[in-house]
Image (tube, rainbow, N blue to C red):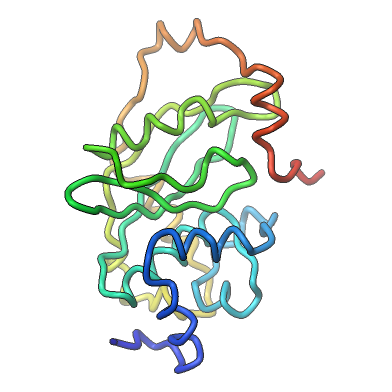
Length: 202
């Protein structure tokens, strides 16, 4: 097992997270980091035991890499809402995802999707803001975090905001046409209330 700059103790933890489900269980157990301007490394997540959606996706990608897989992520882009990062993985040519979120429906996906577009579409009904609006509009191309190895993105103590900005700059694809966007139904109250893990901090 390559160490990628992690300590023996850190590798021991990451080595136990050898399936997407185990990684998801681990990040589900972490308190949500409400500092949305925090872009911290997997090492920071291991030390502080908290994460926001970006940090959860990057951590999941690092755990995947330590266990012999490519560190792949995508970004979901919304209107009147925050963007969302996901670590994605493939099993038998089918795609799944691992994610950290304040919303129940924006987290894990089993590997049952034939394309990244299909995977992204599965988040549509669960991607909403506090005004009951369905907000997901685009998804990015697949991105391999190995491109940023020169930043030591898995272990650095510096901000990884440049990675977050890059995810916002890579090509994105629209999910629905404008004419459909104007006719979207608002989120029903049952889904709205049951779907929130943590309320927005004031």
